[in-house]
Length: 140
Length: 381
Image (tube, rainbow over all chains, first blue to last red; front, side, top):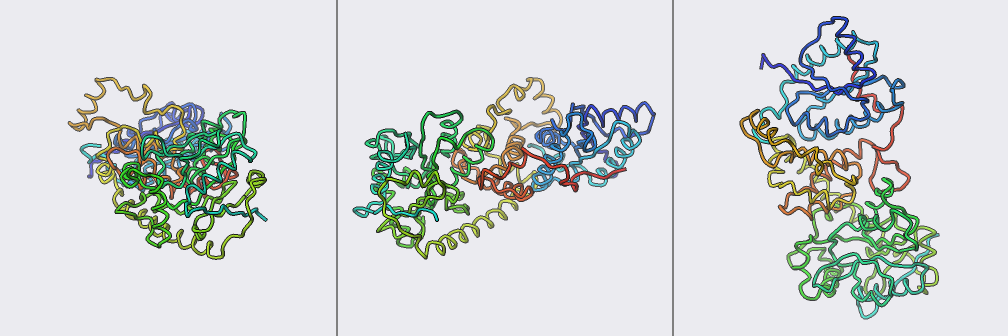
């Protein structure tokens, strides 16, 4: 599938990664249009079912991105998110989802350039991985 | 040294001898009540009962090879607030382990209960048991143990214990306050009773039971039983992994699911007070279904079946104790226990956790550490 364009759902925290995305935008940095962002107050409120739902609906990858450890606006929400991502990376590959389709990154509010670069790398990596198996599934 | 005593077997009847023990315990022990499974007046139904009158134990039979519900759920009801008395509860090992998980989730307390665990040789399914038990259910229990003592195992008259029980590597209630031992014990003569905790020793005081010691062969027979079950379990893990290894196979595996959510209701560790799948989050707009259908031209109804099961796995797998009540409750015989237990094995391993082992181990998703699982954080840019 040479012309495959991945769809990526990103759950980003209000205080760090969303602000970084805003900075990347206002700095007019080039970014791929494949990422659909959902702003959360904290990565600590991303229930595993949000990620599961996105993948079952055909998202080719899910990104969860928040503050660096120690910088969480709610002290430790990002560390709770890390455990949930660990859990998902155990569960999902058992049903054929490549564990690279679930990503966790820390991108701080001032890191607009890092945000833009991360989006480019992520889209390239998922394009390499190919479409999510669910896309071929007629009924689910 | 733990107190080890014996319950003498009278008239070669395990069930009535055990009833005598419970009657004495309720009369002379420092407890206000006893929770134990009993045959209901309606034939073949065995349900937990909370008993305060020693004369109301004539149909008590925790040895009956069936458990229609995981009784951890009812013990949780008894202990979520102070009970106003002390109750001894007779449970299977998986029920104790589920209760320990509920206590850690603040849905039960150990303060008012003394946990009495019985060696568990397994149970028939809710559907098979009435057929096996026939008209004389207490006699059927004796038949079950007779069969085992004769070395014929748990299969009896063409019935056998459920796959969950065959795959259960925890037949011995090591974490009970009082353990009632069957494995490697001469059941023609006595049942073994062992206090594992101070609370257990207090309960056994004044019951007038003569002391004994654990028979030599018990350890060996337990090891043999556990080895058999581990072998069955590991084969189940590999077979289940194989038949659910991608979404297409998983959809097929769950294709008979009618979204009744019985597996969730029966599950002792599905801990949410209100399940999100029953809230208006899932009362989708009618027009939404049409939009979904248009994406691929077809939409399976009811929707969210695979989503439900994967979400349940994400929520409860680190607490799954493998009792198999999910499969017991499934109206369409989907082998859900196999899938939940298999995933649970790997998620618990990932967090170095063993559900139901101890009150000291913290549930994986209730805690976190500053420096851990660095490998799941992507280093990009």
